[in-house]
Image (cartoon, rainbow, N blue to C red; front, side, top):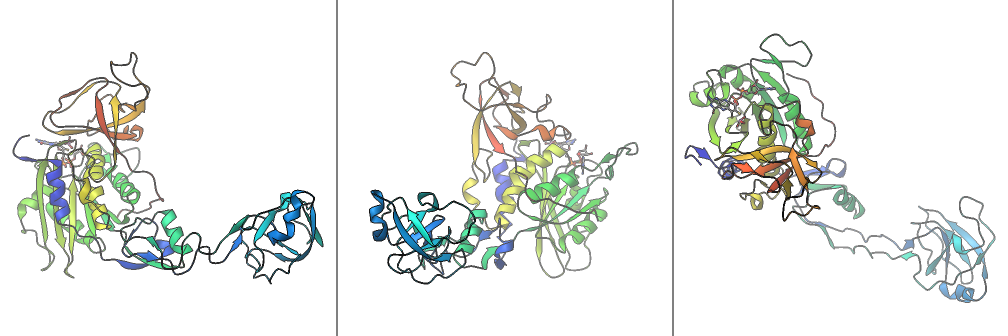
Length: 455
Ligand SMILES: Nc1nc2c(c(=O)[nH]1)N[C@H]1C(S)=C(S)[C@@H](COP(=O)(O)OP(=O)(O)OC[C@H]3O[C@@H](n4cnc5c(N)ncnc54)[C@H](O)[C@@H]3O)O[C@H]1N2
Ligand code: MOO
């Protein structure tokens, strides 16, 4: 690795060092999905809260129907217990019709399924009597109060990611709200004098902005809240204005483009200007550019905007090439968002390329070349095993091939949707042969829809 390049881990460490998790807030359960819990949640109530029926049928005393294993036992039906009702006690020698989840009457200790009686299943008037055709042991089809969790039990530990199951558990134990780390607010600024709005007829020299939609969607797919998307032309003053505007309602700003060594690269120019493009006092912009030993994604930028109200809003500047954006987002921005969101991110900082993420191993179904000295991330798709199978390779392995014949070319935007993962090739490997193991990084999964307008 040449000395002027940072390893991806060194760069990520630098980016993460400037970030702290956002302050926890009280969040109603309706808005808590996906957040990281900032408190232990203990059960305020037993779950289930009261003993109830696991089946649609008849609540009985088991002793009253003990004879049913030889001959059917007929009991008078003294009442109906639909879900939501609080039943009266069950008199000895009687049954009450009961529905799944409804409260077991005091005195009852078992439920006979409707299928095990003479009554037809489904809707119908309350019968006067029921013929029980199967004996039941005490406790049959009964769910006891507190058998899931008891009052005071730890249900969710601080640091838990509030997936659907966790929010559901919080609701079940009596919570309306939880303390959680809020969703980071993210502003996107794309730079480039060549960028035009969407449409089929861009003027000569211009291209449709595809990083705006890419970054906006990735922000949503990583559980953050998109606050604005802005396009800036290639002057440091225009970028400075866009960054100041973006910082107003953001916890993180992500930019694309202008971080390299071109004559008109605004991020680089703003970094080099070192404060010479200060806005009104107290609104400083501090940026730096670095080279990172990865391909794509070598030129990178980072820094911060100081807002007038004294907040320090971090900036992560990605290179403009669209594949570089996807790779840099996956390996650098995703862990940054994870840190802001309160996820544990320390442990994932290894040399695998799986920065803060689980990785899986696959085998290369075709060979390709890598750039020696930079960790390569190749968009790949899952394919059938090659024929013939390379010696020693198990056919049940996961096999991948680059999703485009030009491999990790950083400009291959329109073929990116074919990628199902990123294959990681370490910096000291200059060629991947058929059958070689490669590490896979997962791409984010779709989440709720994202909508925005350009400002
Ligand atoms: N002399 C050198 N030139 C370059 C080097 C180098 O080391 N020396 N590095 C190359 C690498 S690697 C990359 S990556 C790019 C990164 O450059 P920038 O971050 O300054 O990006 P731009 O020049 O602004 O754009 C690069 C490319 O991406 C297209 N682009 C930019 N924004 C968008 C957008 N919003 N939507 C769609 N496409 C976008 C832009 O048109 C360019 O084609 O520098 C290399 N050069
Ligand atoms: O490193 Mo650049 O990101 O290849 O295109």
